[in-house]
Image (cartoon, rainbow, N blue to C red; front, side, top):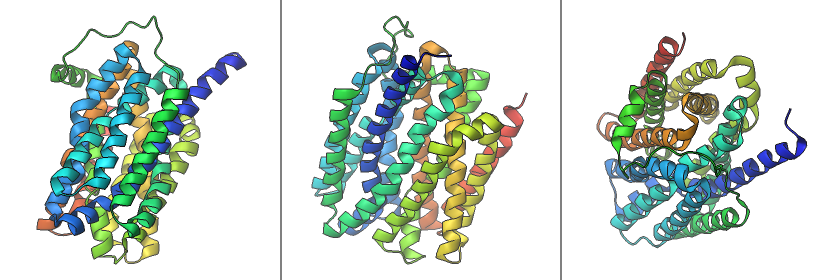
Length: 394
């Protein structure tokens, strides 16, 4: 049993990293639901262009997440987190000041570079948690995402009534608060005597290829890519179908995102620990993928608001148990010296899914019909269910 002082030392950094992540993602939640309408109404963007705009953030993450992960293995988690928060704050200022579609794209690209420090946050959690507690620790980041999507879209939906610039400046203020909090209160988690992996090139994709060749890690990384791609099909199109097909206002779309966030926060912040201890991470991964598949495919066929809320609850619960379970399995199979690097590669593959998913989703939404992004996502997640069952059971 750990001494009481040791337990407090472990809990305090987790609380701080949760607070920082939540404040920062609250800003993310403010702007993400309004991006499609901002680009469409403010700059005349087409559905496909909206898809590329949503994907721009993740494109930067694709390039920089493994870089920040590997640098955090050498320089420490704290400086990488602080630098990323600084870039995020600047990106939101540009978002609020955007006077052209090009500037809006640049703001999202820069925001993705800053947001790529998520690998350092995950590595931080790996540093301060024991293996049996890691699923819950990873769930804290998911809970921060969820809470950010509870309050952020509601705030963004309210502030957008004063103009599209106001939500951007509000998000910048929140990221600045997170930056100051990290600078003042966040201790370094990387042990001074830790031996990092050898120095790698900034964009060395050979590390990703090497990781993919490792049997367990490689399959888990592929599965993480598939679940993010499948879910990301709806990033750009859910706000569009909500306003065009279901007749919701921008504020009501924010409420829908908030509802998704509530379920996700409850699942990843409260239920994941007991569920993982009782059923194990592999089974939660399988069941979560099945729930996510069903929820995605059912969205465009919901006949009324109450049914849609039920479908979104199933979807959010599924992702809430699936994602932290997958991340915990990846962390368990990664070498202790390479936690930041492996988690960075994983987030980079996730970012690739979030690049391709919105673009594909917006394309089929515009060309084939409004239900296709949701059906595509459901089909991909159904494939994940099959792969988890076949490859992760000995």
